[in-house]
Image 1 (tube, rainbow, N blue to C red):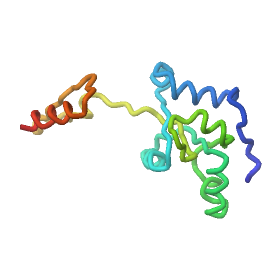
Image 2 (image 1 turned 90 degrees about the vertical axis):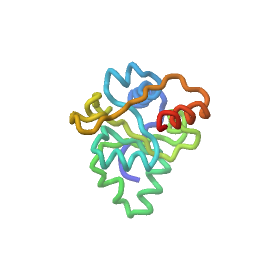
Image 3 (image 1 turned 45 degrees about the horizontal axis):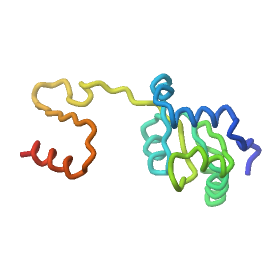
Length: 146
């Protein structure tokens, strides 16, 4: 492993920030950032260029570097930190964390991004709130399509 320090405490300011982003919508909305977890989401965010900072579990970091001859993470174009496995699991929002999470920029969209600005394609939008039964959602979608 390289000389980068490993975050080993829940009292670390970065860990506290991650927890706030995970648990407080006000924090996410004020900072226009949120947390993603997992390899697939990370790769998509990397392609979209929205990653602010990356966090690796100690095991993920070690295994990834071992498999790729210390190149994959060391030459990552994003700022990153390594977090002790037990702390990573504590702050993760998933039951079985994959060992990678990132802070990403919140996309800025308005209604014109969704429906377009041209009058040629008439887009219909259905807004749903508090749907609790998946069967009801299916019925609503089938009815709308009809």
